[in-house]
Image: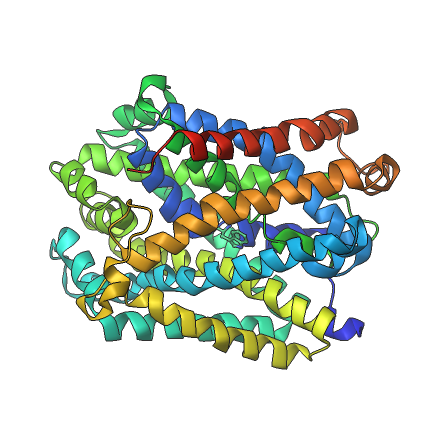
Length: 462
Ligand code: TRP
């Protein structure tokens, strides 16, 4: 395999920012706030944090080390780490990346639309379109197709340029700006009248309001938000140099991702609880929360909101972009390593193939979508193909993929093989290899299995 087609990170910061860019995305800014809303906050958030620390963090380290050890993408790395059968786990991941990307770009497209709208509002004044506007744009099939096409093209463009010249460069510029803007928003949100109620709702556990499906969702989301369970971090790990610390990088990625998710939720809930009538509006379409509740805040409450609003939506788009490139990179790296394609061919070929499925997702919300819009095999969401795919990938494919990674790193690889990767004198003080072993061997697999079995046996998704 040519190393030129593969590439490497320029240094530790490059890896951390690129991987954090993968982790921070619509999962943090859009999905976490709305599932927290749907699951009534408190207890759900606590279970989610437990999943992050006991399951997500250990698996993050496992994926990075499996990738770095073989310097191969998901399929090859799992095969080298745990034997030929684990090739299929890698392929399962490539498939998950394929499906996930096919609908992720649709939501990312919404942020482009709102960026455009916000520019208009900034110039000629805000009109309170509320959820009406959101509903209109998702039902507009041609618009949805164009938006997701633009987004897919941008993703292909970055992956085309490769690891350090494409992926890393984009993350280095966009992430610091994203942090800055979110901080400004947080400060203004905390000053709003509903912020106290928002904090209570998010951080005070009320366990009677959480059900089995909610626990599965918390677990599934911890995989989704950290980009775990489908080989994305294995692929990014394969570009890590021998001298970089996997533990430090993993810790930083997980911490940043979690903080950003909580900050986004505090911001959004503060607005919802402050603005009269917004609560009902959100209740009707939690999916659109990011696009329904925030515009209002910008133009009515935030100092300099008229300037920040377009900037914010462009940043949501950028956060999504650093995630979509990691998804496409999983498929691309697989084609480069295992099918010996050039990077250019691999990126464009897989990108175009995935876009075909994006069309299904893009039509899910519109009457033109026909059966796609009504398809509803989980009896849950009302957005057809789109919800069905999201549900399947996040709640089933990612946890099962993560389970397999835990088995590979905890049971099949030798203690020595993992020890060498994690403990090399560069690891931080808080790290304990023994604790990691316990999590990866027992806690993570048991948690995933227990939750999946409980759901299969007992909980329905209505
Ligand atoms: N983590 C991203 C988010 O929170 C989504 C994502 C990007 C992802 N790459 C992934 C999820 C790989 C699972 C696997 O939006």
